[in-house]
Image (tube, rainbow over all chains, first blue to last red; front, side, top):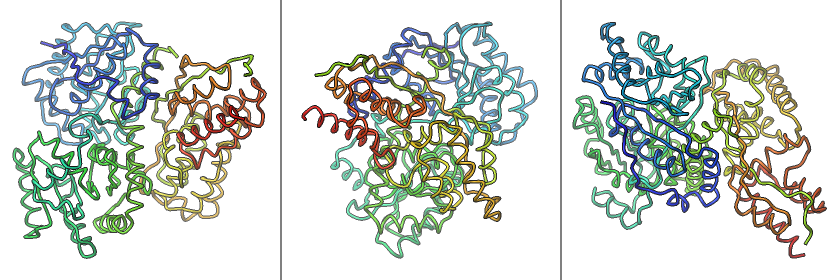
Length: 410
Length: 218
């Protein structure tokens, strides 16, 4: 059965004032003043786990506190539905699609079943990702504004699946993508909403220097020496071997340590293989710390990022790259590959440095280690950039602006 | 203290980013995109980028210049593009014409660079604005000073930078009001001289507050 989620109330809007300043919080209230008690429905396919649910858990209370009459609906289905949507997900990322043609009928039947249970009557309906995309079938003529929010990369989709979904998407009033590179050419308006982080979350909140030091030392890392860190799961697309090679070049010139911290090696056979390859490449170097962390290690990741001298993200392919956002928010100088959403965050020579190779990555790290004042400036500018564009409050502002734009309320 | 005949009504503008149709992977495609993109796209990559990147006070003038430098590695063209000052333009058409001319002339002189692939594509975005009154108004210079301290970045950008296009004058909302409603021409000119390229929005706002306080104390 579809569920209407209870809206969590953990953090108040006023809690963001020390981060953003009073005028920015007041501006959110001003924008929202024209949307009081206007109805909004956000619909997705899960209430826990995954980035979308995490984001909705945080943004919906903010929009509700701002006076919108917002509801969060979660669609449900049987195992067959989730097998199909998982196959869709992989196919939309360019993978093969081997399910029989009847799978499309099953997908639509579950959407129809959810539609019968949900009252889709809000003035603004935001459907997240492909799972509930066909709910638009229930849209009444001249009813509210329907927007499809796509959180995944559609740049190279399997055309069998995209060909099925596209006609549904084209019935919406607009689509939202996280990066222009993830979008498709569509006949409807396409908006850019960046993914965001919550500055008050466990992974991003301020930590006392003593806590940072204690956590770093708990991993046998020396906080007094230079620390280069890449946070990412052990996945070939994150190029941990390339990071090790870049570190080995940098180490010829600078005394430094490397931290490769992430998860994904315990429940993923490929992750385990990658981890083994990395261990082999590192050999007995005591200055490389490989940390296979459990998923609940948010405070540890926060401390590792805050304790780092430079944060690296040497991905070969990337989504938006929220680990980069997290590092920039912590005012860290970042050296990252120019892939996926990273160039949207790392403005070369302003908020960090971009690289296109192992040698380039090593060179940029050496440059920053030789020029700490420039590194500090990049860190400060990166923090400001995230504050303006990639925080949960920026995302709330984008939704308010979108609703005002769609309704002509300005 | 003089009371203005018309109050200053503070507003804010919030912008959505709409993904445009044009993309450039070479300078030749940039030239083409500059011909066909919408005015809201020109606005987004020049006026609006000063809000997006206001905390950068060195070497970032507009998105076109930044892309030409960082993704095409063409510092000479980047310098020319960066030197365009939006304060010199009363319309987006004039600004677009100069952007196109600079890219066109560079491609003519350097045909070998015109088709070279950039490291990353340039995506043309459009800025879709929504204006909302803040419910704050000022009738006197003192009220004006107090109100300035309550402005968000977006509101300040709306009145101090984007207003130039709306007024079709080489000035901003603040200077216009100070001169025309309070007869403070000298203060208006000092406010209008503040460099929006070498100050952050916060820095420029602080500078205006300081100038207004100077006037109040004189």
